Image (cartoon, rainbow, N blue to C red; front, side):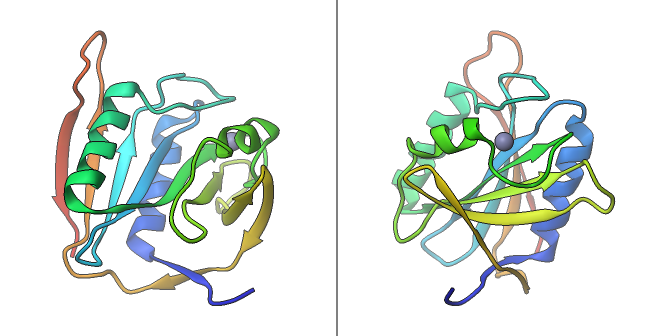
Length: 167
Ligand SMILES: [Zn+2]
C-alpha cells in the first residue's frame, strides 16, 4: 500500500482533544501543507452543530481556500469525529468526499471515534466514494508547524483566527 502517511503526534492529540471538546457533536477541521513543508492544523467550527454530520462554515472555507491560494499550500487531511460509531467514513462522508479533489491522493480523510477508549484514529483515502484504509504513522513535528483555531459566532461571516506555534 506504499509508504505510510505521517502526521505528528501533537496533531493527532489535538484532533482527539477537539473531538472530546465538541462532544456530543462531531468536530471537524483540516491539515494544510504549506509550500515550506510545514503543516498547519486548522480547527474549524462544525456549522451543523450535530452528532451526525459536519460542515465547515462558508466564511471558514473561504479563509482556508484563500490562504491555500496565496501560500500555494495544499489541503492534506480533512478530519472529523464520530461520537457513537467507528472511525470509518459513513455513507454521508462518502458522498461528501466526491466534492473534494486534491493533488496525489489528497485530501486524506481522518476519523476520530469517541465510541471507544482510547479513541481510535484512522486514516482513509476516498476514491469515487469508496473508502480504503491507509496506515497512519507518527512523525516528528515539521519546523514552522502551528495550530490555528477558526471560530465563527452568530451572524459573523469572517472567522476569528487564533494561531499557536507548536514547534
Ligand atoms: Zn462522518
